[in-house]
Length: 358
Image (cartoon, rainbow, N blue to C red; front, side):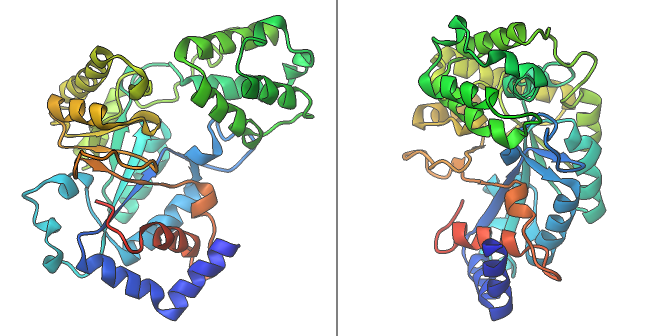
């Protein structure tokens, strides 16, 4: 409500128009990051964290807002040094690029038709090991297990769980004491703790132990696909959607050996180019995991730019690393009658006013 009212004040007092004119005069562009677009907001959120999700209705309204106030352009034009669009004298409105991370199936089934409705471009960063498979991210499995009613059997944390970091144990204990039905929001803080404190092997052990303790067997989603297939990728590419790389395995690159980072960067790029027949020039760091060394490796492999998230862009990499603004339902849904983008206007103005984003 506060964001919505602040955004409404921006729009009605003229401060928003002034902000837009300032952005248009400078070399400014807004780069937005989405992950998933789902039909409705429910307790499961299709086993994704709330910060990864917007609903179809919210996405539709937000594109209306963006098209009204921005020139929405392909991300490749922002990083192409030869593009005339970089010339601030050639435009009267600020620029915006829309991006999606991971390659979720709903990018094709739900987001793609809405983008075509408004004739707006977008860039989708694919995690190539998951495209065309029935594999799932670890946090999808973890959410499924922790939202399951059988979690009550863990009221007494088994010995196998006592080796996990304290915030993880405390989060598990809190969830086991919470009455069903639990919601994805209830699990969010535990997922963040696991992401921050646990390596890949520890996470795999946690999921395996949870499945065994609750009497569930893997695969947890037999016959279901969460990610795009290559035919869908090619159809979107033919319709003007750009494809970039998000790595192969979605592992955090700053935690890997240099040889592993190089493999993730190179193999994912080659895989997308082979399947689509297009050149992949832009990379997006999984979980915003980047530093100067990783950026330099990405540049050496052949990427023109790499997208960071809300983390601070590493020093010493110049304009190679692009900062983005993460969008989710909590930001995008806030609005006011007649002004569906007031919450978004507030967030963008607060984030970008007074400094360049690219």
